[in-house]
Image 1 (cartoon, rainbow, N blue to C red):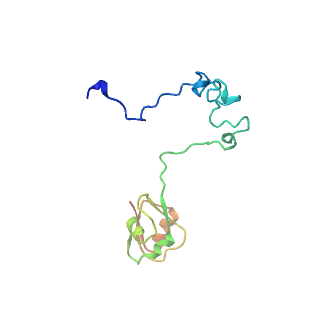
Image 2 (cartoon, rainbow, N blue to C red):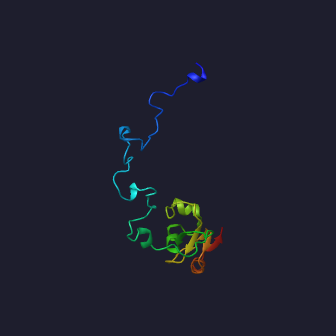
Image 3 (cartoon, one colour):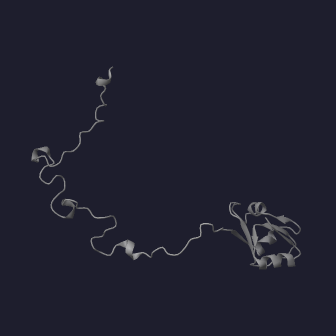
Length: 147
């Protein structure tokens, strides 16, 4: 086989549609554009989202405003009351919180918040603490360690 003998397989090469070349072609007179109207005219297209003069949906929606901090740190919050699941004297770490099913994963940093009371002395290791949570843990005889 030589290079000039190569042919595409049957049905692979389609000839392009030649519109406006007479009625006998099947694409004559209106050239596949139908009858009259905006889409039949030259350059007759509407921009995306155009609703025929009706106030479009995009104008009814509130605009995005303000500033979003790209460096914002999102914490997994754990309340002080949930620390009562552990025995007195134990060291509470994010890994231990996951194994106790208080947290789903250690992907986010952990912050201890002050909702509820803690009634046992624990050593709590977390990424952040609220001042009230720190005070409650230390009042119960525990220790606070930031990771």
